[in-house]
Image 1: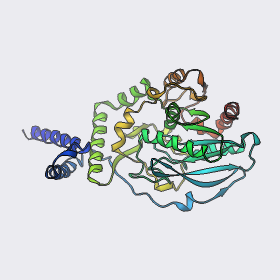
Image 2: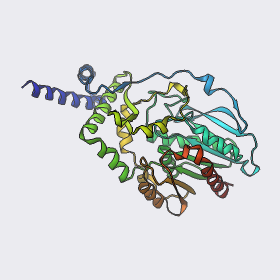
Image 3: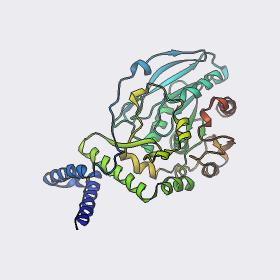
Image 4: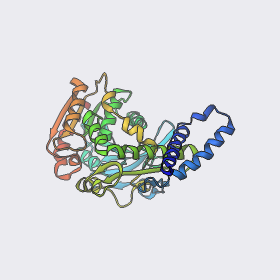
Length: 378
């Protein structure tokens, strides 16, 4: 009997959480909304211990000594720049080559990072490679990440990130450069394909190991979690949505989790994959980056399928796939390349998802990128 009552209470709690999370009470009397808010507090307490792996949100930390500083190497001079996306100030780095190739004087590359990442986590490898080829580049942080403004921190919102791409490329285009190259990796590899199908005014696109939300990706993501995993996702989403309505601190889960230890997260990876994910992370990360993302973005992430947004595709695009990629499968990427039609060139190489950041393979990749840029953007 007590067990049945407990289940009923949980069911009521979830129902109330849903109502509050989506703010169904917008047009309801103030008294009713106050009652709902009070009940929501109780719901939060009832749900508090359902998942011990949930994490509290964090506050952005000042890192201007890192982000604002000018850095000079043999290949480039790095300086900070800012632009606005939907009224929110975003930050990035500009890499000016020490030896600018006259052929690329009017060309600039724009780069954003993949799932849950920001510009100080490995994008300097690509910027350095481009600088050595005499090409200027920009790397930027999405809203809510790194040096960019926006709360809560580390909110993964794919639609907003596509908007950030469009704004960043527009900033580059209006900064004195005739030709713009959008280079996205993994999650951002899907973003640039979506943005190019919309309003992004890029001369050409390079999409590395893109997430495109194909059937293989959905099978792996949902199928591997099982019923319990899906319920945990729903719980995190409801709890953080509730906190959002009430103005409380964000509640989230790990961006990357070790599935060999039974951890729960947005991306559940094996030990070797985690090692590859973290090897190029700096010791001090912009904005105090932590391995967590608020749960309110979960349903948007699960519903995001870039392949469904690719239409009327005309931008010259190089899509790079790896034969042994277990995160963004070759089968799904081939579907995206086919949908992009004649505008797309598919390059398939040996390697896994993280090969595009491997110094042993990157030089060969960069040679093909520069050749592609020269062909389509000069």
